[in-house]
Length: 313
Image (cartoon, rainbow, N blue to C red; front, side):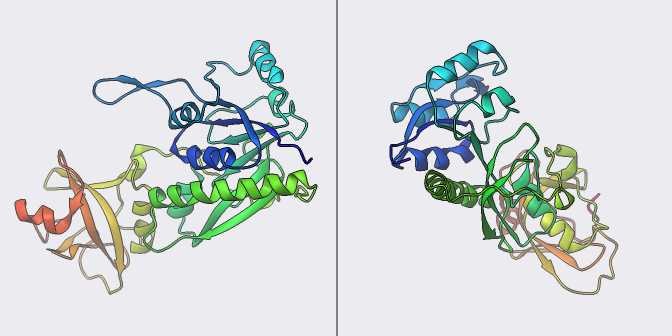
């Protein structure tokens, strides 16, 4: 196809914004953006538009925010737009086959993992939690399963030792936009053959739960290091010391034979909190005391004394 494609984009959160921007900047035409309805946010419960809607309106692109997508009325609206292709990035709902198969080129998705690994709602977080050293994005042809469609274009990215799910969100959202534009170019040239996923290699990435954040200090320091980073910024890892809750950020594994009981606060100084674990020590460089903002341990110690020798529960 030499003519610009007519593309419908479906996405909602911040992660989707770079992908939409990449499409807007591409030779093809975004004829409509579909996102979730506005939601009430903050203490004032002010009705707030999704980030994708803000960008679309700034770019003069029509926005649809259906409450139901499995209706004939909605399908007719999409059919009337005559899309060649639908692109989905973190829309937040399972799409019916009648919608996926409507455009001549089908529906493709920007997924935040190297499929078939980490199918599901939280692929970026689980890659960090599981201690992976590499992740990436996969441009895939969508079917009615949960991230089970054919792979079109995988692009890898290393996970650095200090990466969190938050930092990877930013990196992968940018990477996703570049990969998508490349994939669409190859698709138009007929040079993007689909590859079936090997289901035997599939792993799941379910939604995170706040309960996951309570640390079990008897685990290895390396496991806790990955868990804390994977839960940063949400829901975050935490523990209790002297009946006060502390959230933990920026961990570092410190090798050494542990003689203290797991969870013991062995040191608290400008470098951080040194805590004994089931194997090796963990240095926590940033914390959030209950009722306060996230801060460096050094800043915290200026106004709070922490009981060295006691154990985090």
